[in-house]
Image 1 (cartoon, rainbow, N blue to C red):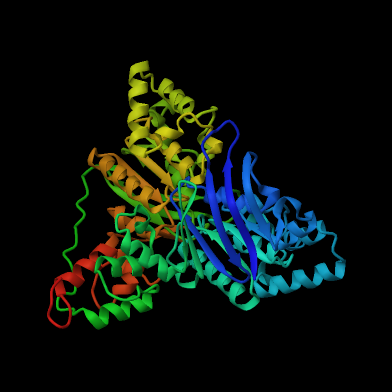
Image 2: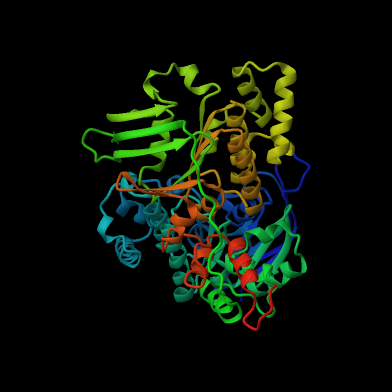
Length: 561
């Protein structure tokens, strides 16, 4: 039975002739798990919000969206609120009360449910989602993963029939993200809940999905099973979305394997072990040779957010060298963003030293620290935007840098071309998608001509193609001896881009090493490519490395590829 039907749907925002969505047609059966993916700005979030009429964006809509045969606009308010659940990308933006137990009850109270019903459902959800231990906690004290789980539990307490999720794992660490997706799968399989999820991280989602929707420029490019999706990309090998596929499918595709593509790590391991020999087990590792100059140094740094609160960083020490790209990994709440704030002097340690180019960060004059020196791209790019258009925002930065009018125009056009956002310069920053905002914010901080670039989750909300472009930009910057520190949950991006990787745990850097040694020795903070090849080949952390080793070894019947 079809629970959701979309017929000839088109949508455009006010004062814009361009359609964000163009002639979308699809239907979702009750109980299906549907993954929606596509490049940043292709209309994924807009489509999702149009299904939830309370969040529907203002603009011109053509076509119909039917829920259980009823047009969304005519749906009863109570039915819409209770039966169509929605989870936002930012866990904090959906929490409205100060206590966990009250957050679980809030939706039911808003629906006017009986007290006995509220108590029973809250107890059930707290037990099912393992919330009992932090049931009475303040919501502000929860980690990112706990907040997102609380959002899910609060929505599920209203017993929705369909759940819409807009990049719910974007701000979660790898373990919390995997746990969250496992919970979604469990709800789908055990309760028959229909799930429609927009995501860029597809490793864990493809194996559990019933259908995949690929969008491009507001259109429905592909809608079908993950297996059919693999066949679609084999027929369209130059499609840029191919880079977003799970590692198992990318490895299989590059090796031009025949038959049905594997979707999971287990299936791909079996495919490689069965078909390829392993006489050559490792590739020569690229060594890291640091410069003699330390751009940033933490010496026994301690920091806490209040006198009576525990230390977030305790005796944290590490160094980043000139021209190095250093990636910081760690769980939600481990102190990664705090470390960047200390490096940029937004926060001050109560003990220890933070040195920038050998000088205590406290001793810098304000302009001396931020102009032509160090700059920070925050986790929420919206905090950087002050003007009505992206171009006006960038021009304001050019004024701070005292660029001439011709210099400013030249730099803006050059950066917009590199980032692929020329068409967005005249748009309001808040009208952009999450990924587009991230690119616009990166352009703004690069206009400051930094020697040290601090990036807090720069791949959050951007598609695989944009990640490749970002990687290329960062590589060009490090060749110019610009130092980069990136805080990220994206282990594959760190494996591809970093010179060294550091792990923050319990307020300290417990491990700092090259990507190959770091990821090869981890079980969960590692790439899918490494999990696929571990025990067959050593030190392969990227799909390309696994493919290269397979080709070097050849098949077990003696053929080299």
